[in-house]
Length: 488
Image (cartoon, rainbow, N blue to C red; front, side):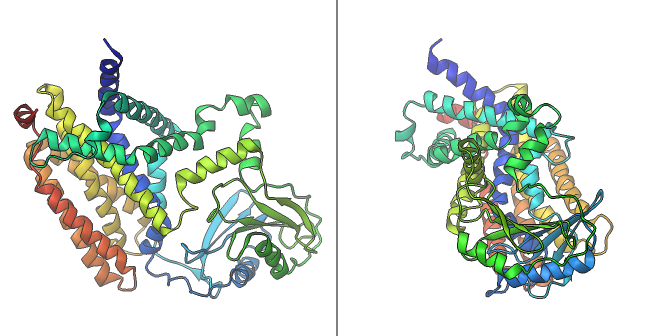
C-alpha cells in the first residue's frame, strides 16, 4: 500500500470520527468572533455606547460606584468599554465571595438587563462543550483538533490535483459537484484552517501537557505561577488598617494613554481599596495588538507613584500570546473579523461536504446512521442557534434561571432535530429541517423588530440572509448512494 492510499484511509476515518464535533466547533467558533456584538444584541435594554466616551471619566464613575457598592472588598476589577462594548463590567472580591455587575458608562449607575450568558455561551461551547464536567470537554476538543490536522495534511497528500480542482466546479453532477465544493472550500480556507487548529491547541497546551510547568514550579503551585505570568498578577502588601483615599485616577490614565495610545486601556485592578497598602494596575487592552501577553502599569494606590512597568515578555510568553491572539482575533478590525468568520464557515462547509461524500460512497448499515447524524448535526444546529436567540426575546424577563433556560432551549431544539432525523427518511428530513431553520430565522428577525426596535438592524438583515440560504439548502438534491453510482 502506497503513501497516497494510506493517507486516503486516514483522511476518511479521521474525518468521520471527528466530523460532527468539528462542524459544531467551526460554527460556534465563527459566531464567537462577534460575541461582544452578539452580547449587546442579547441585552437590548442597554443603550448603545456613546460615540464620544472618555475612558478616564467612565473609570472614575466606576470607582465611585464601587466605593458605595463594594466598600471593604479585597479587590476591585473594572473592564472598561471599548469599540465593541457598551457597558462597564465590574467585579469585586470580598473574602470567598465574588460578585459582578454592569454599569452605565455615561453615569456609572447599575444596570439590570435581562439575564443571559450572551455570546459567551457560544465561546465556551466552542472549546469546552458546555455541560461536560471539568476539563473533559477541552480534552475532547483537543483530540478533534489533532484529528483535524491529520485530515488536512492527509487531504493535501491524497488529492494530487487539489489546486487545479480548486478552479473546477461541475454543477448538477451529484457527487462530482459536492466533491468540487469540498475541494474548493478546503483549498481556499486551508491556511486559515491550519493556523486556527494549531493555535487552538497552543492556547490550551498547559491543559494537554502540564508536565513542563509542573516540573519547573512544582505540582501544587504550577497553576498559580502560570496565572501570574499569563495574566495581570502582582504582589500587594498586607492591609495596614489605615483608611486612606485612593489616588486621583486622571494622571495615572494619562500616563497609560501616553504609553499605549488613546482608548487603549482595557482593565483597571485595585487591591485593598481604601487602605494605605492599596495598589492600582492599569492593563492594556488586547485590541490593536498582536499578542495577549500581559502589559500593564502598576501604581501605588495612595500617592500614584509608578512602581512597575510590564511592557515586554519573554520569547516563550510572547510566542504563546501571539498564538492566542491569532486564534481569538481580538486584535482584528471588523473587516478582518468578517474574514475570520467566513473562513470558519468554510471550515464547516469543508466538514459537511466531506461527511456527505462519505455517505454517498457507501451502501452499508453504518451509512444510514451517519446519514441521519449528518442531518441532526448540520441542519439541526442551524435551528438550535435560532432557538437560543428566540428564547432570549421570548422568555419572561423575571423567569427564574432565565439564562440557563436560554441554553436549555438550544439543546432541547437540537435534541428534537435529532429525534426528527432518526424517525424520518433522510431525503425528507434534510429538506424539512432546512426549511424549519429558515422559518425560525425569519421569525427571529420579525420578533426582534417587534420587541426590540432599538437593537441592531444589521442583525435582522443577517438573520433574513441566513433564512434565504437555508431555503436554498432545502432545495438541493439529496446526495445519495445512487447518485454517487450515477456520476462517479
